[in-house]
Image (cartoon, rainbow, N blue to C red; front, side, top):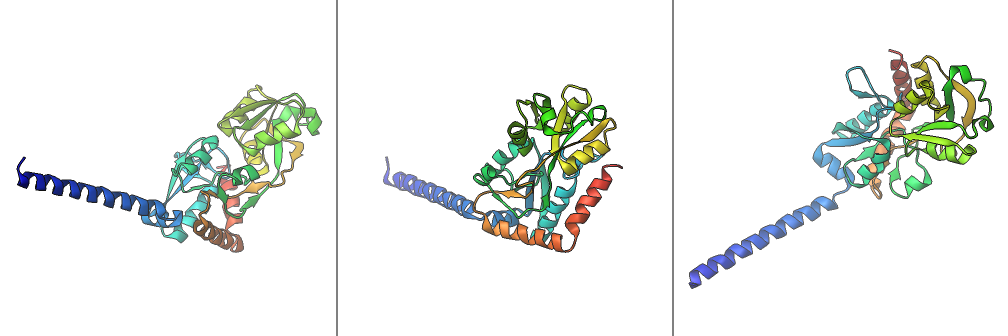
Length: 268
């Protein structure tokens, strides 16, 4: 092989190596960015949610995802100077999607349990509540205390705190865990199960929009009992920015307004 040809091959190889090095360097720099920096660079905040949890997240007649959590996310995105993108998925798939960096945050009526805190970080709480059983109206007086639900068929949304509470608080429950809350409620309406455990405001929303259903007298307290925004571990800058917005929304009354507006829209 001629010397000139060898020189050209070596030079081409060096250029290729340098290009690969620059690409690798660029990739490392991209990966080293904080979540907040990445959100600003992408000019969008990607929110994951399961839109079957009114008044926090549900779909309107046009198929748009609406609710209190959506309004909170919009406020956070505005404060960050970016657009909001909403990704819909089953509740039990949200944490995996967040850890896989397919989402920036989760706003989906998620309770910051100790187990979840081991996997992701949370904002400060933006809503606090207890849980209540929803039953068919004809059986409202039949279930007056939690013992009355022993051995009964009880519906919950899969992967939720309510699933854990039913197994912990009810004796020998026959748990019906489904991906969507709406499907669980439908099973109750059709008489396939005896009760559904939901957070109080969500239970009230479903009862309001489903004649024949009622709130039972049985409530279940939860030591956490409320919702927060989930994000990947160690993103303190993003956490601080989100908490700053939540603090403002709390002080100016927006959180209360978001909830009241979303709740009122359920009847429209």
